Amino acid sequence: MNKVQPNIQKALEGIQNGMTLMIGGFGLCGIPENAIKELVKMGVKDLTCISNNAGVDDYGLGLLLQAKQIKKMISSYVGENEEFERQMLSGELEVDLIPQGSLAERCRAGGAGIPAFFTPAGYGTEVAVGKEVRIFNNKPHILEQALTADFSIVKAWKGDTEGNLIYKATAMNFNPMMAMAGKITIAEVEELVPAGTLDPNFIHTPGIFVQRVFQGEVFEKRIEQRTVRTR
Image (cartoon, rainbow, N blue to C red; front, side, top):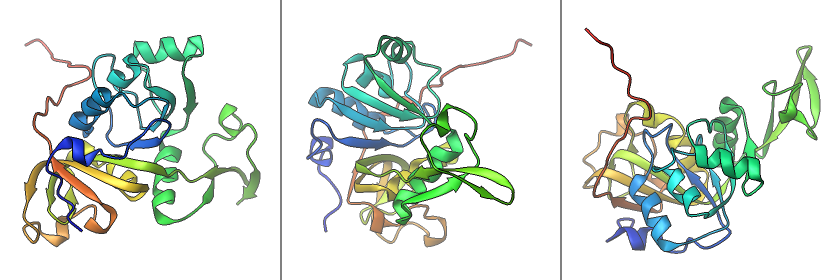
């Protein structure tokens, strides 16, 4: 299989209206920013997006929200996006808020072929409504279903032509488990190298999980809230 795509359009080929997408990253760190911008240009709509957060108003998934291309968000944190808040409160956007650890494990379970698991997180809150409860070690746990997606789009620091990926720092959050949970996984990389170049001991996602890889062109790497101190 030739995993290297000649351009971003070819890499995202097949994404259609109504599909479920996993989008890697944490805050604005490690998000596939070039792929997100291309999805806006493609105009696909009625998407269900699984992502830790919803970006900010003018960047990341916030761009898809502005264009009204997302029907449902499955996330754990959405506090940096005013448009998200407006759409949620007005009923334009369906939202499933999940404890962060549960979201990560639901993605990991989906990639590992585990259909569901019990966790104490969320018991006694709205998160538990309608879910099975069992007692383990004298503590109530709720049943959470695994998450999978039609496409997973992840961002890596380095990748090779076989789809092996290395993430950097905070980008390790959500990208590795989401890369495992998509029917088709697309990797946007900062640096694309020949197969055999990466040290196998430092590969985070083996190429077996990745179907397509392309090198991004421009990475802004924004900071959500820049905080500095005066001398």
